[in-house]
Image (cartoon, rainbow, N blue to C red; front, side, top):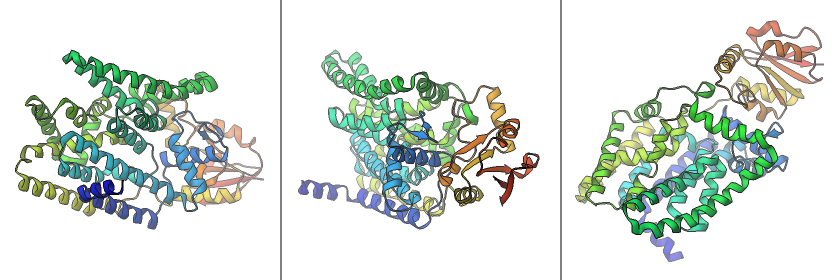
Length: 486
């Protein structure tokens, strides 16, 4: 085994060094310049995970109630780190995301290698992905997307070995639910396509089906248990609200043109993004000329259906493109395979591309100069409330209330739209019960009912809601006024 590791290291030393440097630089940044968890996703995942560990709950929890939006894997892992690793959670959890991102880049390298049989193309694809703004952001923040990408690529790379592919299917499904089945779905479609073209492929198709069906059955156990325990609530929140409606409606202000994701690629790569179309045509040309096999075609275009599907969804969110970034990067570089027979020229061009990408990313400040949150007044308010309050009641700001009212009128909210407020980080950093109120009349009725020790957080322009009795003004935070009930 030692000899095998040495041989692998010698064969892929360039990529290993690049991964090491990438991880080292970003680790230094995360450790030295750590910031608070940002609203929304980071604060939600760490709070859900922390509550799971503290309450010893197999079900994700948000403020003590079942959180049914996503499966438990990612929050549970982040929660475990928060509770049991003796260092600042803002560092440890993000370092985990970084290490997982490095693992994902390793899988991308193997994926491109299996598809193109070209080590230099695989290295440069990894560089282009690692420097992508969306990938960089996810590599430095708490998220579930990196688990999904690892699950997808791991399944493809280990298929048809039952045990290993089941493990990666588990990672994908238990991080992003039904989306985790994507690689199984793509391979099944590929098998059926091959069967239509080659009847002798029937034996392979049936062999794969006999493996996939038990894998699906194992994954479905969790869904059955959740339906038995939570019934229609789980179906509504998990399937209808967070899957079906994200495809069919632009929920929660996530609007965008039909070309939203194409535009996003253009924003990130400019006119160079059109090279991806040339790359797709080159792939098809190589298959027609039988320069690549059907199996290679499956690998090279494995993530392409996901990008196509994204453009059919109505809810537009920038990080949804994350699993498609490797596909775009590979297609942008694939035309270079046309000159790979001229090895010296090919290597020089590949090296030039990699150097330019790294230089431009460093020059733009994406490595050390980009941060995704700051220590703002919301953070300060939560720290103050943690020491001086027993609970927090927040009157959502005027714009937030108006937005929620409009979206509700258009039926563009879901069952969990109102549970996070504008600042879910308040829940994590205050470690207190937080009541987010979206209506002034409702808030006025609740003021007298809150228990002693409860703090109210009210914006300046809602001064007509300042309590007249039973409360004392404690402190101001920017535009916030905090009152505490005696």
